[in-house]
Length: 284
Image (tube, rainbow, N blue to C red; front, side):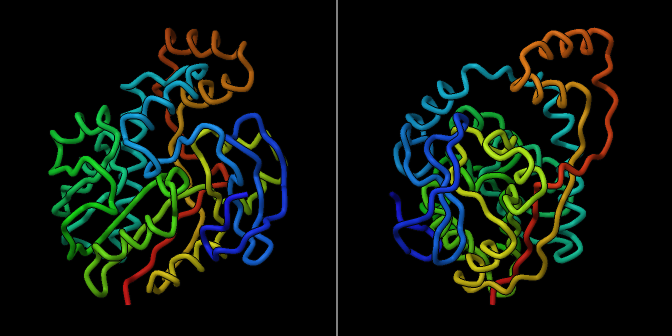
């Protein structure tokens, strides 16, 4: 079994097996951190070249039908505004670095108030983001600049080879007093307790699962002072909901196509899935 990335302890306790994960879910007996204890396909960014990892992730998700790109971007823009509003309660302007910026949806919104830079290892996604902001194509551990007022990452830390190295690298790019923002699934949630091995956050490239306690431990170990860890919702449309449910119940995929023809996907509502948390911490 892989040792715990949070505390280094070995011999974790088995929790469950899920066909949606790349190995067995285990829990550290020492600190309570949940993670995938073995890796069959090596889908984590940082363990291999970005292009090889991207190819393996695409193959692992070949059975999933993706949401229409325009709809995905529309929802991403709404969610980006929610995140930006939360960030600006702590820092209203300055230099902001988004790690794992994907196509640049958050950067597009954040640049109205911040000088923004993105980091993205996936070359396909980076091609879109480079037209929005200055971009470093690679891993945050290799990014040469520092002195940012905000470093932010949304649903990336669970994909990394080592959350500890990832978060320490983000902290090193912050100026003293700067703000770090991390959004990730919360395994200490009602949906996980109800769904178990069928929890929606179990996908092949997710390797680490935090709760508020383990996120706090990781941030404090990197020299950060935790300001707040709380639940956060998101905007959803019938297209998104049907697309995600269709991954579990294939007949819903045909309903998704009907809803698209009727333009029902234009309806957007804020939802709280109860299993996403956002953490804010300042550099000491």
